[in-house]
Amino acid sequence: MKIALVQMNCEKAAIDRNLDLIHQTIADARTEEAAVVCFPEMCLTGYIDPVKFPQAVLDLDHQAIKQLVESSGTHSICVIAGFVERNPEGKPFITQFVASHGKMLGVYRKRTIKEGEEEWFAPGDGRQPIFDVGGVACGLAICADIDDPQIFRDNAALGAKIVFECAAPGLYGSQATRNWASGYRWWRSNCLEKLGQYASEQRIHITVSTQAGRTIDEDFPGGGYLFDDKGRLVVETEDWRDGVLYADMEV
Image (cartoon, rainbow, N blue to C red; front, side):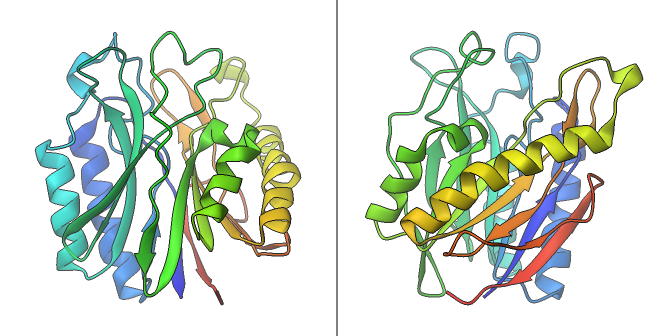
């Protein structure tokens, strides 16, 4: 199975701009004969403060999301994409959805809401959707879920053979003095240390797709990775710049 792991710059609250980039990437991934194209956390809305950008907090039936579901049908591909989702009962969710061949297959709401996010977002209800791609069971994790091995155990227990980790870890420090290489190395080492271990322990493949580059007030490290079910990093992006990592997987 061929997969496309997207390293993407996602401007905050720029939904039309981000949507255009996502549409083009889906089309390109299909040209490359990928079965799955996986985008980073909050790729559609950008990593927003929902109080500052309430217009970018979306319902699951928002037109932009419907368009991406339709695009999965137009291009006969599985699409994994993320956004900030309105929660009628409180703070918004950080949500990743899966659409394939024109149908919504599942929604995962980030379980691990840590210090720095808890003021803005609510944790999901713990439901862990498993979806089928070409006969392969797949699951999801989002960014800080990397710190909770139970999430990867849960995916494995439900039968997942691949877990797609979709991330947007903001970099600390001043944008004016940003060292992109050090930020990239930090996120890479975090993935190596934790995801490599989970993959080995649970005998699952784990992929990573990460937001990249500069937004209006925050920077992201990029990073596309594929760990096999022995915990080995078998393919990765060259650096922190925008791009797509294509990988053939034997599952």
